Image (cartoon, rainbow, N blue to C red; front, top):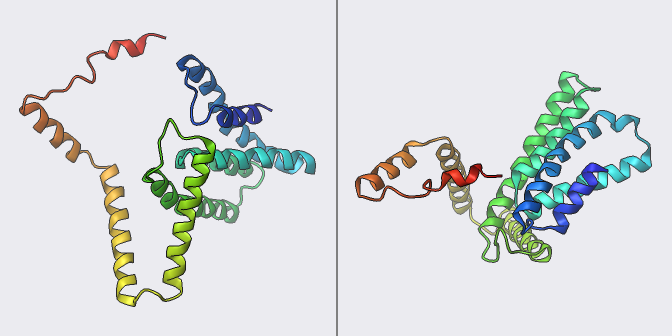
Length: 211
């Protein structure tokens, strides 16, 4: 019931609550949703089929909301919570390996969709409606399927296909390394400071301490 209310509010207040007070109130409820899925994984075998359908529907809606928000974290956190909950009753090494491979496969599938969705011309993090996000998601999926179909049908030459694969791997590796590398940011900040642009983003940091 808690997870159903939380997921329902995510759609009702999509993409986020305009009121800061309301946003802070529902954020605590949102944090409890993955924990509910953890309990669901623990209790799945003991639930009746009707409760499994209801709980599975809530989980599906949470994943769908994560796709519409183009949030890998929201999808993977819900999936991991459910998977780890199942480990309580099924903790064989084979099952652990299978579930982790499944989580990795889901991440590999949603990673390009999320990146393409955020780069879409119609994407706006705070103003898009659910219908707009559905249109963006459908457009991204359609483009991905067309590109995959063109390559699989042999419409691109082997040289072009190899080049595309190489560029994709290179871009992915660069993005991954940059995420865990801070010298670029440090160098930029030092250069800005030495040129008289120290920045003022922390001038009013004390305001954040006010509830």
